Image 1 (cartoon, rainbow, N blue to C red):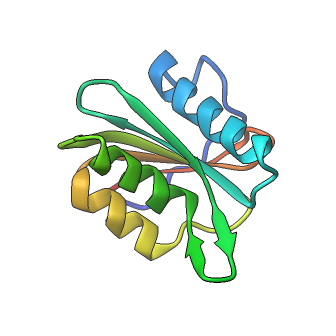
Image 2: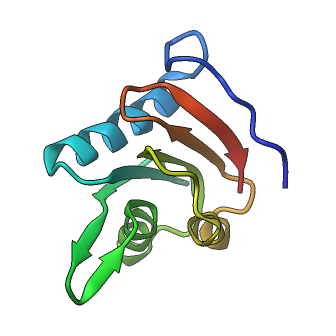
Length: 122
């Protein structure tokens, strides 16, 4: 696994438009329901899937796992990129789920304020 590369605030200079878009969508998903985390993934056709963390008495799903599940259930065959917006560190299980559908996919980890915390390859 490649060591994470820490970057500054998300901006047009550090990311291309499509990568900035999935980070923005992940931030929006988190904010919309005041969840602990939000995520977005982009599949091989450019479609995006967004999700927020689910915390019910009988069901707990991370935002990234749910976004990947939504992509799979919609017929995605491969992931190109994923974004997670969270104060917490990236969970190894979340990385594994992205890797299942997107070996080599780029994973952007951003703080809620848009500061890009790390960029990893699945």
